Length: 165
Image (tube, rainbow, N blue to C red; front, side, top):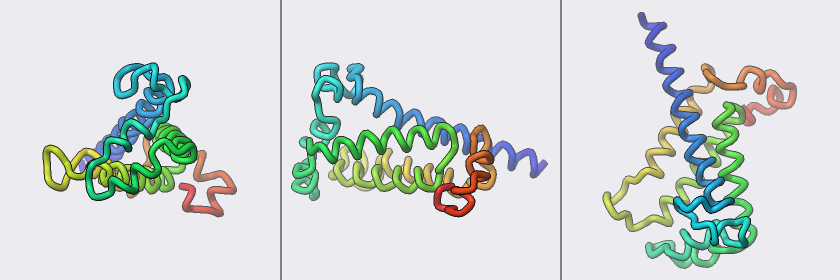
C-alpha cells in the first residue's frame, strides 16, 4: 500500500510540474503574440511592445524605483522572455529541473516583490505558492515521472554537472 501511495505522490508532482510549465509557457506565448489575455495584440513583443513595461511601470510598492528603472530595458525584456521560455520548456519535459526551479523561484520572487503591497493578503500570493511548488518538484528529482529525466541525467555533461539535473 505504501508503494502505491508513493507512486501517486510522484505522479502528482509530475502533473504539478507540467501545470507550472504551462503557467510559464502561456506567459511567454501571450507576451510574444498578444492573444489579448494579459497582453493586447498591439503591445505584443512581435509588434514592438515590451514584455516588462506594462507590469513593471505599474509597480507602486517599496521597490518601485528599482522596477521602474529596468522596465522596458531590452536586456530585461530578453532575460524575462528567455526565462519564461526556458523554465517552461524545462518543466514541461522534465530536464534541468534544479536549474529551472532555481531560476523560476528567483523570477517569481522578483514578481512577488514587484506586487507589493499585495491586494488580498498582507504577505502571501500566488508567486510564493508557485515557489513552494517548484521546491517540491525540485526535491522530487529522484522520481521524475512523465519526463525525459533519465535520458537527461544519463548524458555525460549532466553526469559531470549535477546542477544541470
